[in-house]
Length: 524
Image (cartoon, rainbow, N blue to C red):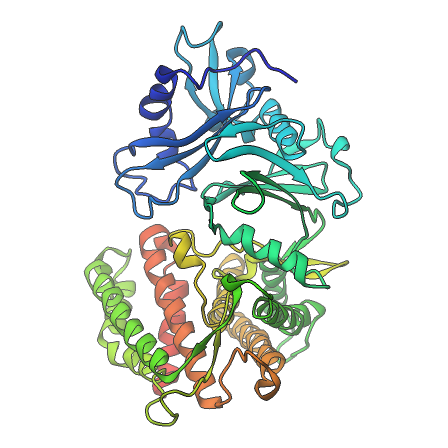
């Protein structure tokens, strides 16, 4: 299908207009832009730019003077006649195309947010169209043996951009059965985005699905050295997020009769079943064969001593920032409690100190192994499906870290700590939305502790047979296990506190209350 209404991306004047005029301010305002959105618009340079016969423009654009600028952004653009562009979301209209570039008045748009743009992306995904970049053809393919009941031919005219998904990537649903995720920072050849790398590895090495199956990709270049730009996965329209389930369960705990402690089906799914699936994920990631990117690495006493010191150094910077910002956080009460946190820096340091095992182990002893992990694990990253059980999604890791850092091996207990903190957020939000009284808040805390403890203990039980594991993910020493988990929970808690100070000051009490509770319990 050829579209004659196309922007000439081979024209140097058009490219210069895109780089200098049309795109910089628009990119700066996107949720997936990792730079400073309050600063001046970034300087852009296309590393790759091509256009399909049906008018889909796909490019990799690098930004100047931005952290992690080594990872360029993927742009999917589409030119629409002005009268058609008037009907789409205003945020998706990027710029009016100058007279002379096209035969009639036209608007440059984000391809993901118009019907013609999504259809062009669909044709690229299914291999009906392609475009050229310097290191190879950009083309999609659907794995015929893996697609679900919905066939690619059924998707036309039935597509949508998922509401609320304009985050670090952009997701499109086709036919209510397949979801296409455009990776806004796909990495580079040889250094793929983990949100591609991990699901693909799991799809071909695990018998039971741990994540929605990958049923297709859009790739630039050949199979061996190409760069995957998007993944097509099975869509689970009736699945429930872990966050929604936890919020519902926490609210149910608020209204339970006094003294009644009864585990609900949702409690069991969140505590026991999610822990089992999490352990299965970690074990699967440590057992992917013949792939150095997934080979576990040993953790020895010196590694824990270094981690302990790194966390102490990092926390000192965090506490300095809290001290400088404490008076701008909304109320005298919040300021006073932040001052208490800063004054108790010794308690924070003591928790990180316990990571260092001292002389209890031989210097060359392998205590356990680090492996690939999720990297940003919380209740919003898991889906409950009645057919498949828990499914884990979004393996990108923390988007503010560069690709190389997100692909490093890490201790699996970091993911466990992330979920522990997520249960705390669910309890706090349930109380806030219900305007809970003191008695209800106590009930919600009891729910949080019960579900969180079940999750942690079940996960430990699942991965705890260290004598028979080739790559044990936790130390055999129980005291050291607790020290590692405590350190990661504290690290996550401090990170959340500063995040809320910077971006959601109305939420600062959630991590602040948890941090004070943690430090008081630890010193008690």
